[in-house]
Amino acid sequence: MRLLIMGPPGAGKGTQATAVADHFSIPAISTGDIFRANVSGGTPLGVEAKKYMDAGEYVPDEVTNNMVRSRIAEPDAESGFLLDGYPRTLAQVTELDGMIEETGHKLDAVLVLTVDQEAVVGRLLKRAEIEGRADDTEDVIRRRLEVYAAETEPLISVYAERGLVVSVDGMGEIDDVQKRIFAALDDVPQS
Ligand code: AMP
Image 1 (tube, helix red, strand yellow):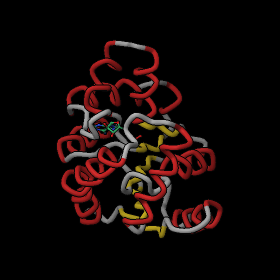
Image 2 (image 1 turned 90 degrees about the vertical axis):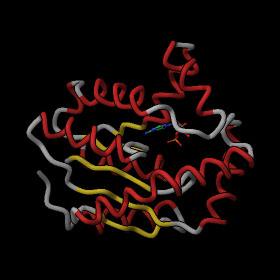
Image 3 (image 1 turned 30 degrees about the vertical axis):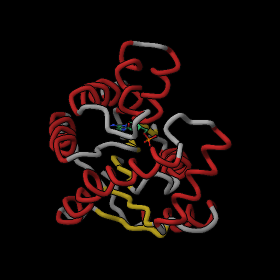
Image 4 (image 1 turned 90 degrees about the horizontal axis):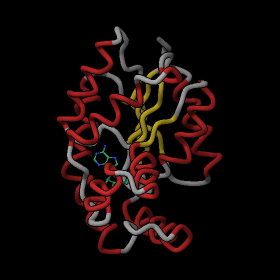
């Protein structure tokens, strides 16, 4: 099973990604988590990524693409994966198409979590208090939402044209959203 999960920052992608990945016994690969691990570890990739992350901007495509390419080439991703937070730009879509094609597989579905914009800002501010993420100040949150709307939201139509989008209401309790997701994904044929 090869899946993507999409939705604006604060839509609850990370939480749901883990549950879905467990269900299908595939790794949940979050580019944000990989970047954060590199930032904490002080690696050259982390030093580079931090500049962009702290400003709410996207890390350059080339850096991000190379990171995903090597991650999905790892043995645990051979039978499938769920990508959380990638692709985020059209250039990344093209790159991912190539990566998957090279392995002779295809993308099975793109799970889109739909949420109310104002509720999302509220969620992010709350998370900022709890986790103390440097990219969760109000200004940076607004910027991240702007970048999402300009660069990433248009990708949903690209995948919709391919008939891959499975749209799920992301508002409400985590368990309820999870049930909706599983019900929606039940209809997706697994490759
Ligand atoms: P996330 O945890 O998915 O919200 O990601 C946190 C930050 O990591 C983003 O605001 C970006 O700065 C960076 N990032 C994560 N994924 C990508 C991506 N696919 N392309 C570019 N930047 C990314």
